[in-house]
Image (cartoon, rainbow, N blue to C red; front, side, top):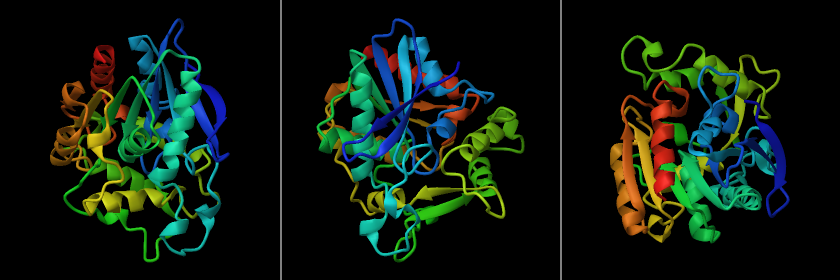
Length: 310
């Protein structure tokens, strides 16, 4: 299925790319929000890849699927400070406090066409969605926090933005592959990741606005505001208070995910303020890149079933 591309604007005028997987007759929709490094077409799957994109799979539940590129990602507008020189935290772009406005723009645009809108955050995207629902007074039919990072027990070395922090960072093709491979058990990645999945993932990245032309090896750039949010979370000062979330919420992770730990995910679940509207699930055999893996369909089904109940 070809995805339909829409250009929308955040309240401050930032141009955003929103992709739609239409579903005939749908009265509900799902908005997917990516994580800290990779934009929507790479994170949730490209129609050209060996796995079914999550935005398309949403249609199995009778809902239209949407995925937004947050500011500084994919084909959305880059903040002015993206290529600037390190000059302190105030100029590091794409903090969750800014990106929450992008989610607001996406949910508002989709809400003009559909009766109910469900929201799904992925990794750092869970921080953005949490910020949106608690600080922007957003309202959705349900929230799914997939592979969340809320109060991690320790700081990851990957979250080092420099001192003073650089506005952006570069990630090579080889580094991206190593990060994924490290989470796969055994010597046969194909047992968990379909053949060609990484290649399709990187092709989507290379075709996006994050591609760095002229680099010595295939490279993308990503904004570093995300890393400051993750550092705050590791210090026990998350960007949002889960106790303020009243929407029905599912917390879900893959059992092989070393970036989103069981301890942290359960901690988020315990702090949610939605009472009996909260649920927790784990998908066996899935890593932090679960939407692109063999077990991705199990994730999609679990989220869709929760949205049915919500």
